Image 1 (tube, rainbow, N blue to C red):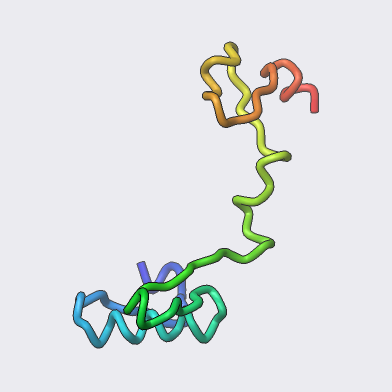
Image 2 (cartoon, one colour; image 1 turned 90 degrees about the horizontal axis):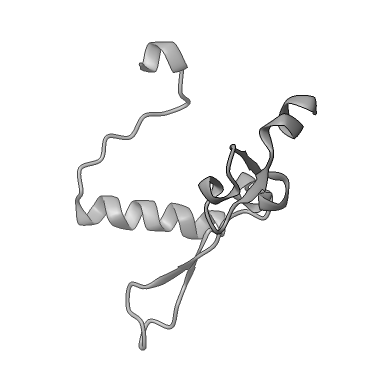
Length: 86
């Protein structure tokens, strides 16, 4: 798979404490993690995503199905005939 995708790097997960600390530090450096008060919440982080993350475009994401009920309560539904016309 690496030959096919040509990733910049590969990391094999080993589950060690050193790996945990390394990954947390990477997320801290990137600003994705914020360390909470160590006295109150040791080893606890606040995690946030990038504002440009695709998951934040819910208002432009639609489920096209014959029944609005099939889209689920938290999704935007559009009639499939309208989707095909777009």
